[in-house]
Image 1 (cartoon, rainbow, N blue to C red):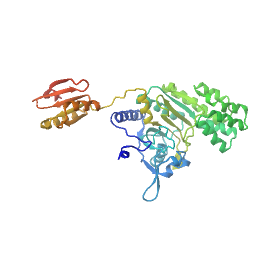
Image 2: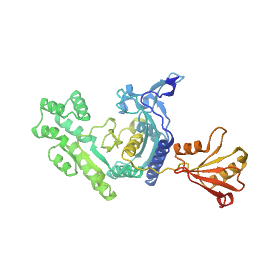
Image 3: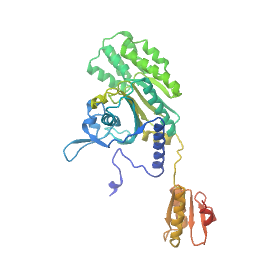
Image 4: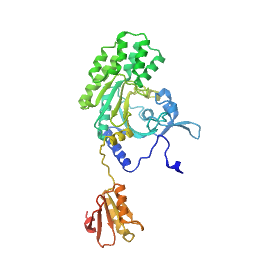
Length: 420
């Protein structure tokens, strides 16, 4: 029986005040997306395995929750929204030649082999801007991302921006074989700089290029570092990537959000479908990224629609941890009042509750049970963070108003409460 009360590893219950705060944060994020003109879409929680197979560049199959339907088809709980949105856009907007802006909010599922405190079920909120290859689209999505985090209540955070084409260009210039490239990217993702130094020393290449590889950890933070990196390579792809980041920064200055942005030329992200600008977001109080995203210009081709795209995903659970640990207040529309009535006053209690609810007030209606004292209900109100109690007992046209915080009481006339 004890085991039935616990959740499996990697999932958790969210309830009461925490649930109310999460709903409020999600509402704020949705509102920010709406203000930028993004329209909601809700793909199914599970899809065919083929939607997320390795060739799409999503998570590895061993990290997916897979099951079979009654027809023997392999299904997957979505580990990532982007392939699902790509499928939807290809299905419903196949003939649309102008940009499509979509937003989503929901849970995703990854069967992490090493939890390290990570959740296997988590809430993501994100957008996809489909059909626009411009730097303006990149900048709009990054600017919206920043507005979403600010709307959620965060103030101290940083969006690190990289470009998938930069390292790809350098690796092409270095002439590494496929195995060496995969090893290099793995070392970069794990920030194993000693391993990187050893690897580039073992591969024949120009001294200037080797110097650039070895100094990648220093090429981050300011936009001035982009110019320094551009002087160290002659590869057209790497130079084009740097110039795209420089253009992105100039546009973000127009949005007035450039102070939240830094650059990391050595950035490597988990998903391999990204082709251009990539980014990750960090803040205090959480050891994981709270944001990831970037440009994926070839993913929709796999579903039959040729449309360059860019988007982001906010890890809502990570944002909530940061809000809690940074002691950021989140105001919610919680229950402020309890109407407590004696059984003989049932009709009056229900009538009074209906009156207040019709004005938009959220309240709790309870009949006092025999064997429970008024003090017990006051203590219950404290536990549930209810502001006060309207206690209806046999007093004619009068009720007691009890302040939960200090237990003080005063008498009020029903006729005064019912005004309006």
